[in-house]
Amino acid sequence: MKREDLHEPFSIEYITVNEGPREGHKHSFFELAYIVEGSGIQCINKSRFAYLPGHMFLITPEDCHSFEVETATTFFYLRFNNIYIRESGILTSNVKKLEFILQNANHKPGCILKNIVDKQVVKPLVDAIIREYENRDIYNQELIQQYVNTLIVLVARNIAKFLHLELSDNTDQRAANILNFIQANIYYPERLRAEYLCKHFNVSINYLGKYFKQHTGSTLQKYIVQYRQTLIEHRLIHSDKRLGEIVDEFGFTDESHLNKFFRNNKGISPKAFRVKNFARPTVMAS
Image (cartoon, rainbow, N blue to C red):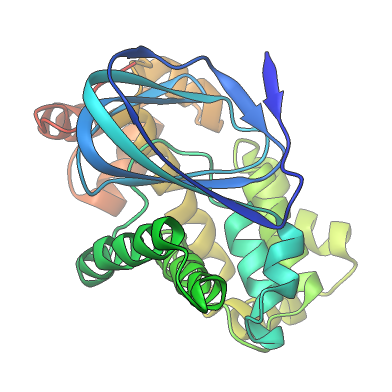
């Protein structure tokens, strides 16, 4: 599989593709893809999503992705790496948070702009970047960098909300490590028990709960449940996995256990949730 590298802190591309699939590939960097015009399918890590104008996608390092163009599509690409985040002029106190949030974007299909207000801001922001990029006017590089920084922060905010996180300036490396561990082991419930986490991170049970809440804004159990629920919802919407396969993937004892968990958090059964959301025109199952 083709792998692309970035040899500068960030780059911009503005192109129109008329038809056909684009070859699946991976990156060593972050890529924001904004749909200016056109329609088709975004494919990422074997999941598929019907794209339309105004959708924006974040492709993180090592994601396998491609686009299948159905009607002539104008793409705006912003590619950047960790070096750019650290040296971009974004407030130093925010750099660690940005790196963590972007790295933990969950590799999901679909538009990352969940906040309607932010979605309305992104279009004129992208238009401004394209205008400066094409016109090459005085101070255009300085303006482009400011616009790019704003775009990255907006994306990070939407991801943080989607991950149910409230990372503060007090968030330190251990908290980030705990979150990373939870996300990496969300499919293994036995590793997410407080006793296991305390042993793994060498802290007491009383300290772990207080520490996690202080640095993330969420209780440990609430975060695990919400993160697990979010991933299951995405499986139901963006894949054709059977309920039995989801049971096995997330370590439930059986479909009844999954059904009870899902109803407690969503108020409806997984099957009803899938039927309800499958009807939405912007989403296609793989």
